Amino acid sequence: MRAPLEALIKGLAELCGQPANAITAVGETTLAHLATRPDYSVTRRNELIGFIEVKAPGKGADPRQFTDEHDKKQWGKLKTLPNLIYTDGNSFSLWQDGERQGGVVQLEGDVMTSGKSPQRAARAASAVRELLRWQPIAPRTAKQLAETSARYCRLLREEVKEELGRNNPGLTTLAQEWRNLLFPQADADQFADGYAQAVTFGLLVARVRDVDLSKGLDTAANELRKSSTLIGTALRLLVDDPNVKKALATSLDTLRRVLNEVHWQTVTKGNPEAWLYFYEDFLEVYDNTLRKRTGPTTPHPRSSRRWCASPTRRCAIPLFSIGAKGWPLRQ
Image (tube, rainbow, N blue to C red):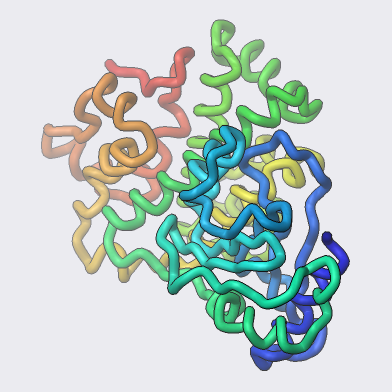
């Protein structure tokens, strides 16, 4: 079904006024058992704008109605994405942060025989126009930023778990090095948790330092090393393997795209203590059970509060406090 669907997407982009070749749908390798990787990522002038998940013709485009266990598990993870289309080729629906935008658009005919029909493309345009126009919304408060970061960090954790289950060589090697150097008892789930948090907070620190994430993770890590050597080096080691970046592209590219819109002055509004509750707010969304187990992470002595009021220091805390069981260490 890919050829007629790709022809339809190209027609939709033209109907929505996009220049020729501005929109590209990048198909993933077919791995039906994976739950965190949509079938297509969609870029506009090489910049990520969304995803498309393709189902068999006749299955429909409302994931809340699916009964297959794999489909339900997949929706539980993909609904985190900020801009996602579900389609079976005959119907389309747009989902942003788990909320459906508009209704399900049902097309006439059948995708296998009518995929290139201009009439079909015109009908589907209403469902995908917003996908093509999407721009990340920058968080305006520290709490919003914590919640946004947590959702995509959780998706990254799930993607790492999935890839470890497939014995991804790059991640398997990293996990073994993690155990050898840091936490000998860490299992796969604990490594996935530590990896996801370390990468997420590394990117947050990069934005504190005004590092442009649009140029890629390698460039971001190298730029960060100029001002935060240890954190930049750690980030580079975690995302250095091209195969790892490719395997985790759904979550890594989404994190990079969304966090690059963060403007620290807008988030803090001049309040130096805006960051004091950041990690607690993050954990509440990322893993509330973990938050309850670790207890309060906000320092109370005035000197400690002043030290942690720095966004760089506050965002760096999780990078150095992930213990052998994946929980922040408590003193």
